[in-house]
View 1 (spheres, chains in turn red, brown):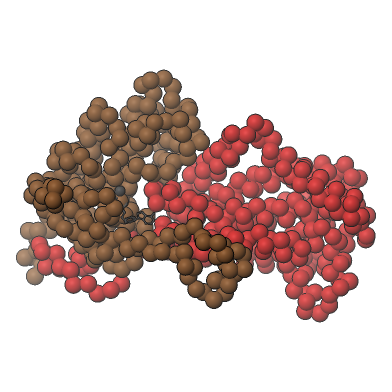
View 2: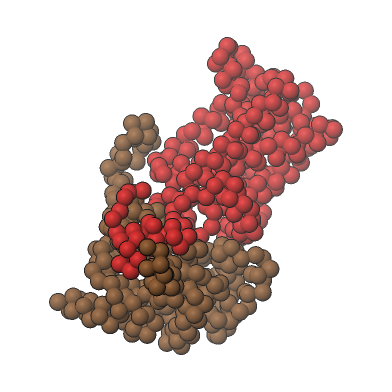
Amino acid sequence: MPQTAVIDSETGLTLKELARRHGLSAAGKLPSLRDYTRQLWSYRHFISSYANAKVTSSLGRTRLGVFWQVLTPLINAAVYYVIFGVVLKQKSGVENFVAYLCTGVFIFGFTQSVVQAGIQAVSGNLGLIRALHFPRASLPLAITMVEIRNMIASMAVLIVIVLAFGEPITLEWLLIVPIFLMQCVFNAGLALAAARLGSKVADVKQLVPFAMRIWLYGSAVLYPVTRFTDHLSGWKLYLVEANPLLVFIDLMRHALMEDVPLAASPVVLWLEAIAWTLLVGIGGYVYFWRGEKGYGRG
Amino acid sequence: MADTMTGSDRREPTVIVDDAHVVYRVQQSATPGTGSPLASFKRIITGTKPATLREVHAIKGVSFVAHKGEAIGLIGTNGSGKSTLLRAIAGLLPTDKGAIYAAGQPSLLGVNAALMSDLPGERNVVLGCLAMGMSPAEVKSQVKDIIEFSGINERGDFSSLPMRTYSSGMGARLRFAIAAAKKHDVLLIDEALATGDAKFRRRSEQRVRDLRKDAGTVFLVSHSEQSIRDTCERAIWLESGLIRADGPTADVLKEYEAYVKR
Ligand SMILES: Nc1ncnc2c1ncn2[C@@H]1O[C@H](COP(=O)(O)OP(=O)(O)O)[C@@H](O)[C@H]1O
Ligand SMILES: [Mg+2]
């Protein structure tokens, strides 16, 4: 803060001293991480009603309304099935290719839509940010909640598809819940980080579709994960297989299906998933918090 | 030294603006060629600012002290920085230089306070109250009063219609009613009363006086000189981001009028 020589005529103090004397706090001061988290918690009702409001206002004008939450993933799966299952006959190595493909598409789509919406969570709401006071992390978190709700609908669709294509229900299905929760935290961190990036550099938004495309091909969504082991080796293979989305997708396939080829042993995958969840969840939150006071600037 | 100041300490400051500067950064719509992914990528890598990024220096070093129980009118021609200053006091826009100190959390009440236009007024009330930090129970008990005070239901059940169907005056009424539902240490009103009709203006001016009595400080931007004369005893005249005059309302308004007529 620059040293200013502005003096209050009544007290003869500099304005800074006067503010300190009366316990006034600087408008742009960053709250501590703990205080911020507490504030955010007290705004939980705002976050959930904002999320509800977003769903209502985005579906409100469509005729089918909430059915879109189920229709969108169904159409997605159908498109990919036609292209990769029927036209390209991409089945080599996986027995139940439809279930394999759909799991990949749905899990990937969850993170993809969170990133796409997260980039605009701050920059698309400048009006709200410049008008009202609330912890700004509410916005990316609300967006994550919207996508989580959509994903729960998609998961129901996915389970029906997987069952319809002959996979049995096993005890391993219980693992769906912790995998899903980990991905939720991972996505929340990603949404927070994307929101701050998108608020500062408008260019990022232009690059997101390309980044997501590369990520899609690197996550073995559309073809068996064994393609990587066939063509890569050493550190390159290691790099590709540490990809968090590949890990989440593989774990979910492992939970839902019998006899799927995996990138690594399940234990390794679980450890990697936990590490990614903590790293991105906490890292994204801290990164967003540090920018808290600048989001109004645009 | 301490006892020489006790006399003036009775006037407790609530807002201190200390040589504040505010700069907007604006992304203009790109000229052809600069919007391509490759160009974006290059800018990110090299860290250069896009040619389309313009800076608007809206507040250029403003200082003043506001005290408890004061109502201060902000006047100035269009684009002089009144709204920007209020946003900065509310902590919604960061200062680039200097500092702004405030007691508690100042609340800004503006004309373009964006609520969600696809949602009915009632849900906007709930959302707005939650965003002001009320608990769901408080919100529930207040919703009816707020809608009643706003008067949007005087001509039928408008509170259940989406806000995009409201006239601009109705929207402004509802926003004012939401913000006035809470006690504020510092209330910043930016032309929010201007679009209301005479009846609503009278009612809201009464509410402003009440809020002031609760030991708060009120800032009022208005193009109605009468409204400023009625509610404020002090006025600040802002021009091109600088203070031109600061003092009793009558004096400042006289100077301002002379300037505008010239
Ligand atoms: N969102 C914005 N982005 C960029 N510049 C802005 C923005 N809002 C206002 N300005 C600029 O800041 C200056 C002050 O504007 P404002 O505070 O709205 O004036 P007033 O409220 O006194 O009419 C003007 O030059 C205006 O062009
Ligand atoms: Mg204005």
